[in-house]
Image 1 (spheres, rainbow, N blue to C red):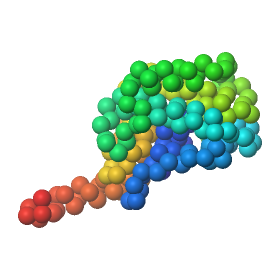
Image 2 (image 1 turned 180 degrees about the horizontal axis):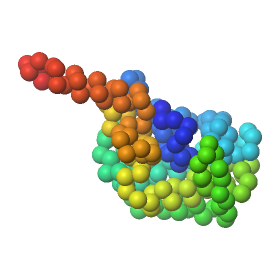
Image 3 (image 1 turned 90 degrees about the horizontal axis):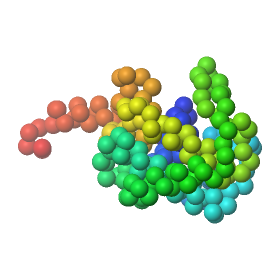
Image 4 (image 1 turned 60 degrees about the horizontal axis):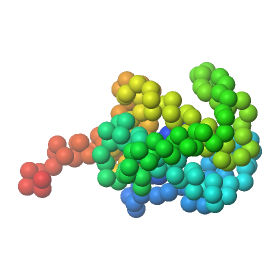
Length: 191
């Protein structure tokens, strides 16, 4: 999966991931959501997430994936969002962002500046609001920053932090290069 250096909204979108066995969902229980919120620093310590929080997180994630597909012109069938309507996706992000007033602050991590809430919220719902606010900033930013990984079988998104970056991870880059090599050297009768 795409690394921990990705913004939280990309990490939320990438809780849908794929391998050789198919497409998987890392947020299928409230406990998995609570672990994800804690691991991303969105909550102070281990928060309790409810089924309603999980539903809100999945709705936000599906909306973000739909809007990311729009922004990146992503047409991969495996990356399709459960939310097909763009207007519904915009409304879902706006609704999540409006749940509580989030006062942004400047943070420093690993020598890089980033947006962070004044305090990590204890509530899972408030934490999702932070992700929605961050998503609005990234989705309305310049084109070419948010990208879809087009490696074979991948359904992830990533933030392009280097001009030559084409894939979400080194593994996806290796798969894409291997697929291109195979295609170039495959016998004409097998094509």
